[in-house]
Image (cartoon, rainbow, N blue to C red):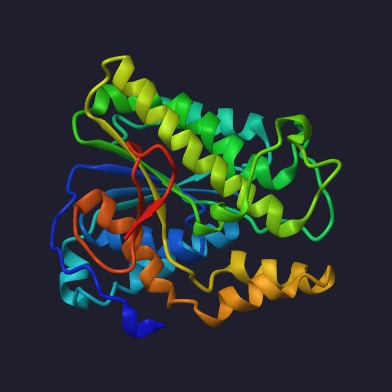
Length: 290
């Protein structure tokens, strides 16, 4: 499916901007960090695995994105910083937010990118929530609200970007079984968490508007079907539970990893590409807009 994509050609700089990216040690998050670092931003990688994140930082420093030369990359980059964040723990989310609020002068862009494939067997976090829902939605919900005051003081031109997935169309939320204790299925769990991302984005945008808080724009994106660790883990877990059909179809139309990064990058920089899914909130029904 690579022949359907286009690269973002914008040369916009982000000098003086601070960006927080969750799950930036690999996959789309890492490629997004690479791109924004090349544009002069201070990029904060908020991740769980410190060893893996340090390796990602070294890789980002030594390997520029395809649109910039090594000479340009060496002389015009921003900064990279690492913060510990384990989305399986609300305490870790709170600690990370506290450190960010204390140490960072401003936060201009928050990219809630981290995500996990649903586990092959049912799991709960230490906080008592179904693990996929907490990692993909609840902890990002909490982190966003904790960082909002800092972003408000950093405005205008601040942005919150929630990375969702087109899989939301397969989901519904049963509030009588919010932890899926009666009806767990791995694809259902993942799709439901992505629907929650979208509903959160819609509600946050609406509440910011009603509170007359300007200068913080909220976006929700589908990055395309990208062969990241999330997809491979979902494939492996699906094989264990003999639920391969949806994942196999997804794998056959997967885009290269750098294309997923482009979908996120256009949001801070207003550069168009295809395919991109933005969610249009003024429609009665949530629907993708291409």
